[in-house]
Each structure stands twice: as structure tokens, then as C-alpha cells.
Image 1: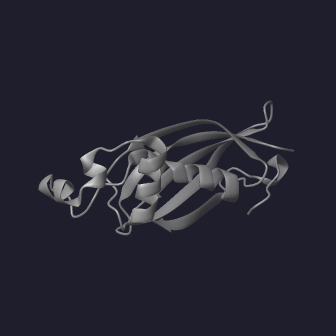
Image 2: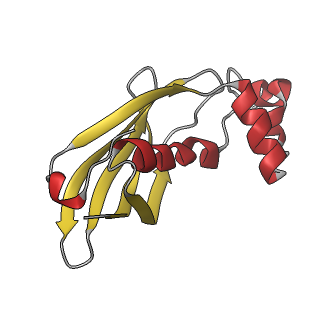
Length: 138
């Protein structure tokens, strides 16, 4: 876990990590949220809709932005203020994802940083893009 304080973070800093969407994650997300849409839970249905496997929940994919902020950038001293995302392309169960954030702005009045975030799949296609405003301890 990174432990960047506000003064240690510069515009342009990037951090990221890789994760694979597993069936176990899908099952846990369904159990927590109650979302039983067959596109996410029935492989045959997903295939009938033109996908190779079940489609990951968009919010499961986006949830890794919490890991990005809380573990990587800035890490331990973070508090997410806002998240804005666009789901660009479906994520399929089994996809390997790369989650990345880049600091594009610092606001010293409120000790916040603005991250430009993106999540790409194993083919380097963007699946999620967005921005996060994160508070950072001094």
C-alpha cells in the first residue's frame, strides 16, 4: 500500500495495477447487490446476445477505482470525494484488466487531487474512462 501525502504528489504521477475478473467476484457482487440480470449470470443468455461469456457488472469493474485510490494513488491517506465514469466497452468474465490513474490537477485549498482514470482490457482496449476527485492528508 502506498502512503503518499498531498505534498509528495505531483501532477503527472501515474499508478496502476492488473486484475482478472473472476466468476467468484461476479458471484460475490451478485450476492451483495441482488442484481440477477441474466447477462451477468447466465452464460447461455450472454452468448445468445453475442458475448463469449457472461458480461461483468459495470459497477464491479468500476469498483477497482476504489482500490486504485485506497491502495495505489494516493493510497493510505485518501478519501474519495467524487467519481465520474463512462463504460466504453463490455468486460467479459475472465478478462485481465489494467487499472490506471494519472494526477492531472492538485487543489491546495482543499488538499485534493484530480485523477484521470482508465481501465483497459488485455487487448489494450479502453473499457472504462473517467475522473476521480480525492482528498489527501498532508
